[in-house]
Image 1 (cartoon, one colour):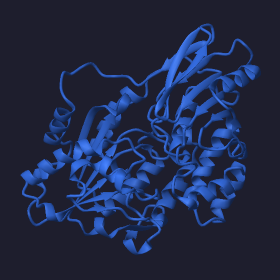
Image 2: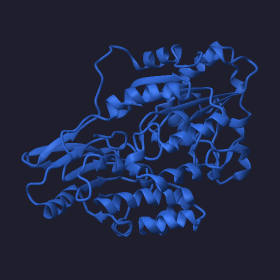
Image 3: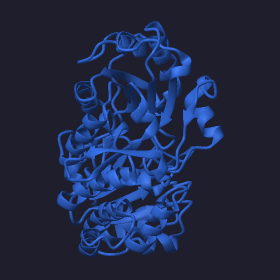
Image 4: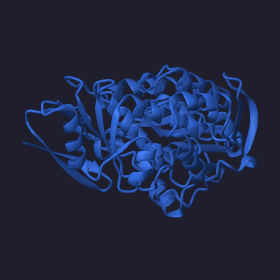
Length: 426
């Protein structure tokens, strides 16, 4: 009997799987030891940007600078990166009073004071941090039209900056193929009207399993079009391993450096598995703050299970429920995620909701629960709500595995993905 441990919330959960049934346990790969520190990795990356001059060469004392950073829903170790970025900026003559940190919230809730302190380190509150509710439309300015005919509306603080720096993390993404790069601009600091175009574009035309891990998909291209109009002068993107350890950093041009980072990330976050299994145990960790983020673990896990008849056991803490503090998205999920894919597509095309971003999420959700049998375990979403959304609720991992074997038979092959929130195994 094999005992497998995987992260759930702030603990590890154990599951016993008969040796006969266990096919594989997929983990994030770790590159060979380089005998260097994480600080050295960051320093070397900033000294050797891809497709761009160094940061110190593009700033001066007169330029206003916006450092656009990931929010609390992302594992990006921003607090480790910022001191090195500021050192580079000061080396180029930039003045502290001309620098602002802008949180790329997209349509997520604003961050609390404690979250800002933890996420941005000692530089907060020494440097002004812009933390804007996306529903405050007065904070955005119209600057043009996107590739889908959508208005490009950007935070005024970002628009007014002479130099725009994006700080993010490269990880598989259900819509944009991979995170990082231009995503810090769109949806990061764009208005709801801009973001709904790119979010609905993908799922209305492609299955999320085709969009995810494709860095050249239609959504990524639309996002990069918006970013080219807005302007993004420099990116600093991490690739993380287990426990949020920095494995590499890529800096420079928002397309060239991003693609170099994706190439590296594919070796780490897309390890090969020997076969597709009948039963796949997956976890949302570390994208576990809510289901809005946690769906990544479900979609990433689906790459390892047999299509149509496969069973996914999905472990999701979802400490902030369906969509954190975003009541608008939460209501949309409750209203629409129980409907069929066809109903949701029609609803999007006819704009039957004032939350098309939430409806795009619901469509991605339905692609999963209609095509796989998904057993869901969550300590923070009620079993009634899980059932309403199309999940098969389970009290714990043993209960879920018992149900799965009752459907597949005792000879079913089982796979386990331990960090599915940031990794895809194919």
